[in-house]
Image (cartoon, rainbow, N blue to C red; front, side, top):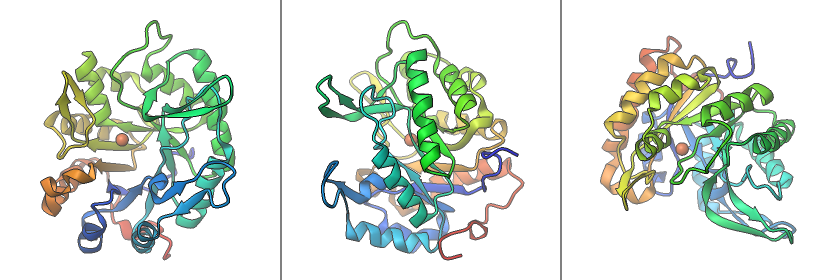
Length: 310
Ligand SMILES: [Fe+2]
């Protein structure tokens, strides 16, 4: 049994955002796990600062409460694994310190880059995740970095497919080919964001099912689902409310084809909390759970999964 197939089945969860503390305290039964972006729980004062990762007390408080009751997953945004310049090993060590504290069964980041390092060594942050060119030179660089991440953090590591609004010309590989070689060479897994796939397929006119046929679905450990909206002629990953019907159909296609899928996470932006409401969030989670459990024999009872309390 390899590392990915040995992972526990978590079930259905939600991505943490600042609108959620009350929902978590009153409706925790609706979810089997919580996913967090650790970077949102601290202010990063930059390399060399005395207290580089200054934690936000009120955020830590709700996290501490949840972690006693449910498994917590880490979905980071700070790795910038596709930056051709700097790669921040200290950031990875900080993620490992959080894994030791919160016992993430696995952790993930994005197949993208947000930081750009100039030839003078200055680092700039684009503020958005940019796609990596799907070329062999980039693949070799990312393989080396995934190896470093996996040396520092013993829990399995996943990379997520991003949304992109422009396509680099003359790329050497398709995105599934890139992921397939990356996962085969490193042993890392895939976090398949079905809504990002849907947005890309819709904007760039390709078939999302064919993408899934090309991707090695044995490497998919987690799926993201979300809603989006049209803006300036493009369909965006705005995370603006419930999942559209095509995303549910893609999830229905994925679940029976991905034997190591262990978790489905619903993402929404906190500004849409009042639009969804607690009942709306529950409905999204319930629909995801019915699709997930239909094809999974194992119990989705989250109390059987280790939390820090056990
Ligand atoms: Fe996502």
